[in-house]
Each structure stands twice: as structure tokens, then as C-alpha cells.
Length: 193
Image 1 (tube, rainbow, N blue to C red):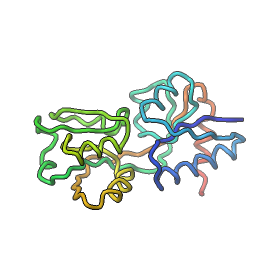
Image 2 (cartoon, rainbow, N blue to C red; image 1 turned 30 degrees about the vertical axis):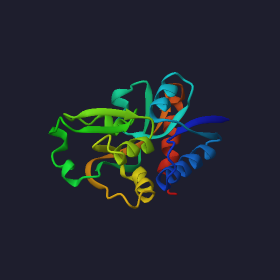
Image 3 (cartoon, one colour; image 1 turned 135 degrees about the vertical axis):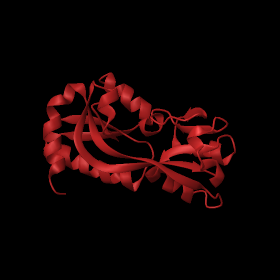
């Protein structure tokens, strides 16, 4: 039986490790997972509308904001949110500085939960956010440290400073119509791998 699972667009070892665990869990339950790389906000919207069965991972606190989605309450891993800038001094008290322009991916809940005085600019993906910073159009990018590693490696000439902002547990999320699967998936994820 097929199950459509939205996944982050950015390829990373982190994403692949979680994808492998989720794939194994569904295969053991008799499902054939189909992984669809989609933007963060679109994955939420498609799940809410019943057009996507699950999301590979989201912050575990997601159920507070989206009661119609089912969080499989088992932390798959942790993500650290970082504030990144080309100027280390910009990171000092950045939350209280209204003159700063801060960018993050639209629908990236870890970043959307952050309160700050500066101007917020949302973009479609991590590359756009970092491109804006590298071109001097934004002062700070909020992004998870796993996604940033590849972007920093691709720009070895840029000196990028960063500061840890918060750490979040991430869990697998199901669309409401698959509520009955939550316990079975949880049991599979709890098995040693």
C-alpha cells in the first residue's frame, strides 16, 4: 500500500538518516513509502488538505500549532537553529536590533517561532536565504545547522559567523486520516536499528 511522505528539498546526511529509518518502519508495516521533496510550507498545506499522507520530520511541538496533524511522539533526532551572518558583530543582541534584516525559509517553523525586532524576509529555500546574505541584502539568516554545512562548504571564501539560537526535537508527522498508523509507526521507530 503506498504512502506519500513529504521531505525537505535540501539533501543532507541528516535527512537521509531519518528517511532510511522512516522507510524501514513503513516497509515493515506493509507500506510502500513514496518520498516527495517539497518546500516546508507546502508540505504542511498538503497534509492539512489530505493530499500528502505524512511529513518525514517536523519539530515535535508542531501539534500545538496544527491540531489536525498527528505527531508520532518519538524524537528522531535534534535540530539546532543557528543565526548566521557575514559580520560577527551583527550577531550581538540581534533579537533586539530593529535595523537588522533577517531571512529564513517560508514555513520553517523553528525560525518562524523566533521573536525579534528586525525586519523578517521569508524565501523559498536555504540557497535563496544565503544568497541574499552573501550579496549583502540581509544581515542574518536563520537556518538549522544541518542544512547550512553544505552551503558553507560551497562558499569557502565567505567568512560566516554563527550563533546557536535554539535546539528542537524532530518527530515524524502524519495527516489526520492516518491517525490509526501512529502507534504502529511509533512501535517500529522504538525498535533498535
